[in-house]
Image (cartoon, rainbow, N blue to C red; front, side):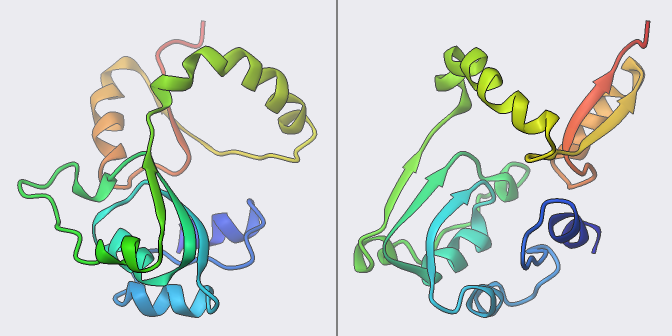
Amino acid sequence: MKYVDLLKNKFWFDEAFNYKEDCDLNAALKRYFPNGIDMHFENVGGKMLDAVLLNMRDHGRIARCGMTSTYNLDEPERIKNLMFIIYKRIRMEGFSAIEYFHLYPKFLDHILPYIRESVIVYVEDLAEGLENGATALLGLFIGCNVGKQVLVVSRE
């Protein structure tokens, strides 16, 4: 429940659920989005994407930047509800952060004042010591971290 509490109490979300713990993702999305979903940032894939496609509104938009639920599978999960992209005229587009690295300095100029004023908040998960780097990296793929994973190599 730590993720739901974090979203609601630190990041000010009205509602939240943990997709890894909810048995019926379609029902959960219907409960939290009774009128459907207009926009979705997709980074999970698999069963979550399948449920999202069922619950998108007509002309909805999905930005895709990852499929974390499938990274460690021998066989990727198949998406069954792709026809809803056509039925609901959904726009889905993939992107990679690499394309936008050149804008990073401009992003920092824009975002840092909001962070300083606590308008935007974030969470870091610190791992100490180079010897813990591999464990911290592998933990990213099984949900061990909460927030941005940071490896502190030296405090000097």
